[in-house]
Amino acid sequence: MVPESSAGRRRASTATGTGEPPWVGRLRTAARLDLAPVHRQPSTPRVVVATCAALVASIGLDELAVHVATSTFPTTRHFPHFRVADFATLTIVGVVLACAAWPVVTRLSSAPRWLFFRLAVLATLTLWIPDGWLLLKGETVKGVAVLMVLHLLIALVTYNLLVHVARIRGSSREGTSTASTDGSPVPLHLSEPAVRRIWNAMAALVGVELVLGVATIVSVPFRRPDALLPHRATWIYAAHGGVGVALGIGALALLVVSTVAGRMARIGAMMGAAGVLLGVAGGVLATFQVTRLPGMGVMLVGVVVAGFGYLAPALEAMGKAEVARAEAARAEAARSVARGEPAVNGHVADPTAR
Image (tube, rainbow, N blue to C red; front, side):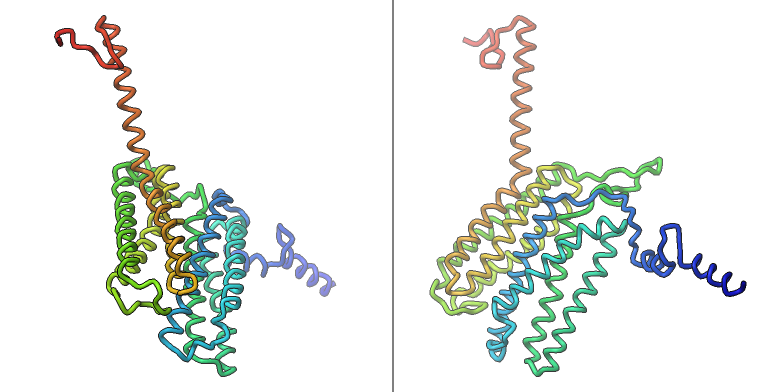
């Protein structure tokens, strides 16, 4: 009798309302896998945009890091893992897996950013294990260090692009403020004048980048050796790159700020970020002699796309102002007709005018 009652207690302890062992429930609770998210899932177009942006940015980081490493540390030029086919393939596989995991996490957890951040940290630590093995095999320390830094940077870029560009929607904490008098959340919204000022500032920065790009083309020799900085007009080249870095930081910041702005501002922020990413990719290509010409073309396309994107709110405001003026003119013409005054082309004619 005693063994049977003990077995019954064990069976009861290993079965919950969902038929799972208690340790599974504790594990799900610790990982916040509650399977009951209150938010709406990220839209498929945003996931696709975030994935493409993460791929471009990550491969651009790869190229830039390898270029800097081989230029600064000549001993790493023959490092086997600096081959394009090697690092590009692994980067594409890793980024695609991470971007595919994000929609899954948002469906399984009500705290997806909390969980996804910890998964990103775990994945980065896991990728460092093969790097440690390369050290044990006698590979160059500088080359392995560059690989480890690259894994960390790619994880940061991919994580931020996914959680901000392909963000969850309708969360109780997203885009709300508790400043209302009755305690209910009040949606935050960036005013149109503020949007125009911020977006116009980014458009002006894009214009500065275009001017510096033209100055770089004129001042820096086209047929120069592969190097991070050229020997001539170094300060113009460095200023061009510095403004590009500022544009990249601003583009990511605007993607976050655009969540509390209007639809056109959000579209402009996404267009601007896409253009900046194209510019970064073109800049990386332009550092190499064999890809310099197409890289310059890609940079030009990126500047044009970014410029139109950041000017979108201003263009929308101009359109609204024109529509408002036309409606005011029609209303004034209607009032003049009601008063019996002649109206010509929507304007009231002055009967005293000769």
